[in-house]
Image 1 (tube, rainbow, N blue to C red):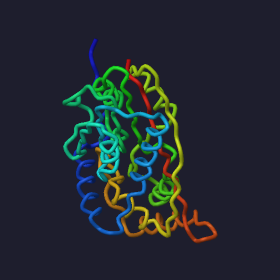
Image 2 (image 1 turned 90 degrees about the horizontal axis):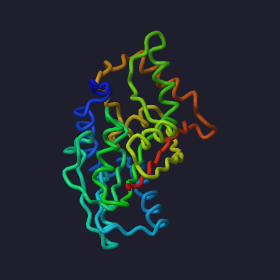
Image 3 (image 1 turned 180 degrees about the vertical axis):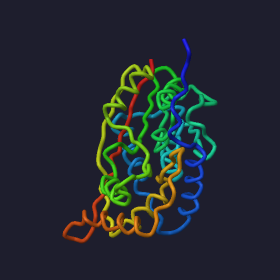
Length: 252
């Protein structure tokens, strides 16, 4: 049977370039990092609830270093992977992990089933994988603003995101013994579209689509800003939602 390559939706080069820029921006005192901080805090709470103390763990995507530091403090041997060097669609170079945590990493790859399969393969028997990604229920005000910017023929400026049902199906395809997908909402208030875009750049969350859209012109950008502010609340702020999906799977 002829094997088919997955469609090329994302650019790994653009994603890595965005991460490099974000790490430079993180050296600034007021750089936003709330999405990753929320993911790390949630993972730590889950591990405490499960009373999980892995002997050998792999942490992918936590450029804060907080999660690895906490795991080492509990006696775990921890490997860390820098997303600037990692190809999420290739097998991991090492294995035998009791725990693999992936943060904000696999949500923007062309072969997500393959990425999950590689993560499962790197687990030891009875090992557990926990992956947190930004899900499809995110950034509705921004999406509305982008449509308003180019009402006649909007360009693709925001990449597709995975929803809960799709994530559950993907975990089954990757042959985890058991799997759970759950979601939660992180709400953040913004005074302007520009503030939101700046925060997304700080956190390497801008578009990494393989086909890059041209910059918005002055008039289109003005329409986007106005449309974004239509969602203002009584405090003159626009509340955006980041839906965080957490995929948890156990290996045989």
